[in-house]
Length: 465
Image (cartoon, rainbow, N blue to C red; front, side, top):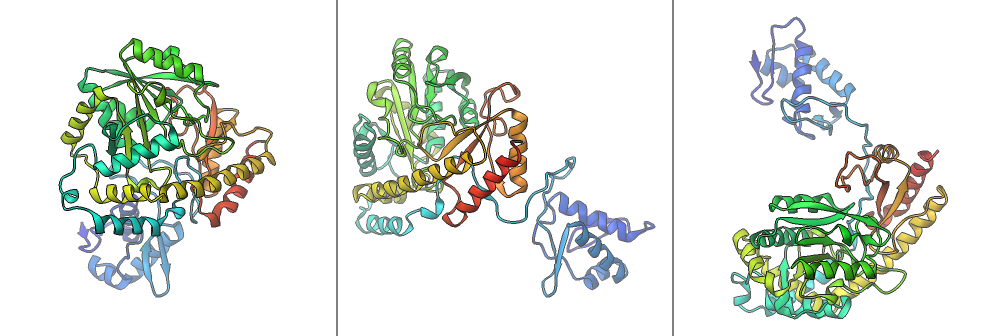
C-alpha cells in the first residue's frame, strides 16, 4: 500500500490497473467528504512522483474523474474537487436526485426578504446605543433582559398588538425557539409533562418541546383553527393570528374555549405571534393574550420582521411562570447580548422599527397578490389562508404529487416545502392527510422574484396534468 502525504490516499499500487485504483481512491475521498468541494489537487507530475506512478496514469485518472463530474479542470486554475453531494464515511451511497448547478431560489416559508434588512438604520442604532450606554449596561445583564428594551417592547406590543403587560412581564430571548425551549424547561420544573400543539404545525417546535421532557399531543386544525376539544395536558402552543402553516385565524369561539380550558385545568396557553404585524386585507387581529393575561404567554421575535440572524425575541409571561423561566435562563447561560438589546431598544424608541414594518408590509402584500394572480393562470386551485404573513398554502391532490413537485422544483432551482415533505403532520407516515405546498414569497431577492414566479407557475402547470 502506498499513501500520498498530501491527499492521504490509500490504494493498491501493485494491482493490475493502478490507474483504476487511483480513480477509486479519489472517488471515495470525494464521496465521503475527505476531499472537500473546491480543494485543489496536486499537479499530475507531483502526484505521480509522490505515488510512484507514471505521469500518464495520473493524467488519465484525472481526465476520467473530470468526465464523470467528480473533478473540474480549467486552464490556469488546475484541477479541483467538484461540488458533489457526499456521504459520511462508512455510509451507503444512495442515489441522489439531480440538481441544478445555478443558484437556488428560496420559496421556503418563514424567511423574510433579507436584502431589505435596514443595515444603515441598525448600524445607526448600534452607534447611538453605544454612545449613550452606561457602564453597567455592559456588565452581566439581568436574565430577563435590559430594563430599557423590556420597557420599549412592552410599549410597542401594547400599541401594535393590544398586549396587556408591563415591563416586568417581558422576558428578552434569543429568538422564539430559544425562548420556547427555556419556557418548556420552566413548565417541566413546575411538574408539567404534556403539551398540545397544532396539527399540522412546525416539527421543529415539537422537537424542542420533547427535548425538554414533554409529551406532545396533536390539536387538529380546521377552518376555525385548532380544536379546543382536543386540548390535553397543562399547556397548548397556538398560532392564533395566522396559523402556521394553514394560514387560518383562530375563531373567536375557539379562543374563548381554549381560555376556559386553561382556567379550568390550571393550564397555560403559548401564543406564537410570529408574523402578527403582517395582515393585508384588514387590520391585524389583536393578540389573544389580552383576553387572559394570567393564562397566556405571548411570544414574538424579530426573525420575520427583521432577519432570523438578529436572534432577538420577547415573551410576555404571567407572573407565576417568571421565576422558573428566569431560573432556566440562568442555568442555560442564555442571556442575550447587551449590545443587541441596546440597539433594538433604540430602533423601537426612534420609530425605525415601525417604519421598517410598514415598508415590508407593502412589499409582502404586493408579492402575495402577484403570486395568487400568477398561479391562477395555470391552476384552478386557489391559494388557501388569509392574506397575511409571508407564506400561502397551495393544496394538492396527494402526498405523491407533493413529492413530485418538491423534487421537480429542486431540479429547476426552486427550494419548495410541502406539508408531508417537511414533517408538518404529527404522523408523517399517514398519506391520507392533506397535501400542499407551503409557499414562502418573501425570501427571493427583488431581482429574482419574477423568475421565481415564472419557474413556479411552469412547475405547477407541468405537474398538474
